View 1 (tube, rainbow, N blue to C red):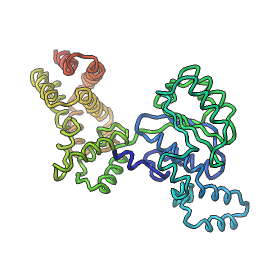
View 2: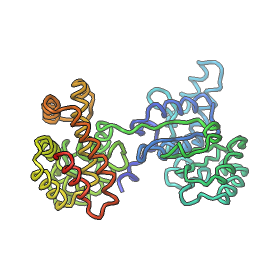
View 3: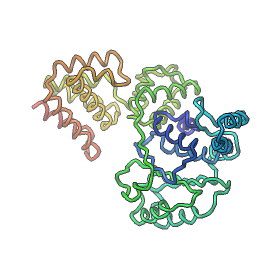
View 4: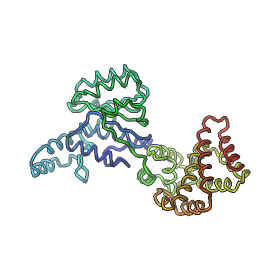
Length: 390
């Protein structure tokens, strides 16, 4: 899978989380390492990848030399020590810490067999016994003599008793231990745990950031795909870079039979709906053309498209129209939209009634939530159309 092949190995390769990267690099350079961190954010935004890079840098042999250089009081001597490190590879262009990816500890971390880095999936190891084993392991020194880092993914899945057991070790951890907790649902974590960790909130990536990473991967993999097709993949990922990378892997598997991948190919391979259907469908609803709207729903359903995905994109399209009606300048801040889309949305926003547009968004949002429980996937959308055109 491409998302594993191109997983970031340095801080500079992390996409879209500059605010977190800068803070962690500052902590590494100053030597003020916290004992517990919480990485919170939606799926596929780089939480685990950044945790691994941070853990790798903590025990990197090159970083240890750099830290010693930082503790030298005279700047001239400090610069001399840094210069003597030569090709240690542990500095970014701005002079911030980076893992060297050359020493045996960095290589082991990259290959996933670093004994100092223990990763735990709390979704499948959520009981108090697992946390007790973790506490016993934390009391043992790291094999390398450096830091022992515990990365607990999906930490919100722990039971209450497991959280209470974890709380004690986080509150009074050994000096050689660093905890990195990762979660998509921080509201489920006990307040007593939240008060003892440094929290970092990861942002959803915008379409330009995702597109740039996909272009780089496609170029290195020799995948012939145009920019519009890349943008379509980025839009479908909903801010999750990993989802976009998985989608590109799926498209790569079909690339042998396709000379140059287009938007139409992406829509067909991923089961996405062409953008042109959304203004067409909204136009039918606004003109009370119930028959044409129902026919379009059936057409989309028979094409094999995920109806929940279609309804979600429909809500997003109607939202853009509403935002353009409230303030046309808002469209300029929306990433990934071409001139045709902006022109279409701007034109529609001037003619549609705001209250009816709000009612449409509410109805389609409700329909989207009902699709997963409906015996017929298209039924909730059809009922919404009947209600809106009555």
